Length: 248
Image (cartoon, rainbow, N blue to C red; front, side):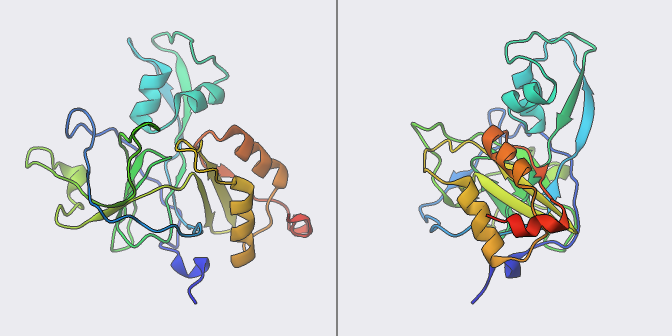
């Protein structure tokens, strides 16, 4: 039987620039097919994208606008910079932006949209770096269905960022608010709000991964903090070797 460990797609840390794409109406549009993806256990990934950097505020910027540009929730951006959500940004103000994200693992497609992350991941079939692009997804009252999708690109839309996209290939839309990745000897955990109220237990998900894959010990205090904050950013939750006995 195939295990989660068997489904890893990458063998190295990958870092890619997260961009906002203006393809259709200011957002990337995806045509969703009727095929619905059956529920599957969380797969342990071995790839993350993004990085931490400093951003200089320009006139008209807001936390929501900056967060949308870089694929980070406004509340997470506010927490990273110890600001209130209603703060008015000043031109020239420096913001710390961390847009580290776990690339979903175990999905049989090179183009993946994960609804809780609000990101399209484009995987290089030849093992190169992946890319992540913010996309618009449905609100809870009009949820985006999971399943296969195609990207209706127009000739003028397909710039360099889309050279690896084949409009004839179907991608897949998934719903995974909890993601884990092991990159070399480090373990990353990313938790999002359960926007469609599917009542998923993040800690139970982490335990299921531990039962099926031998990964480094976790710092359970960090795990609890990531679950509590559910800020949608990947955090390093690697613990010390003797923490293995404290697995829950």
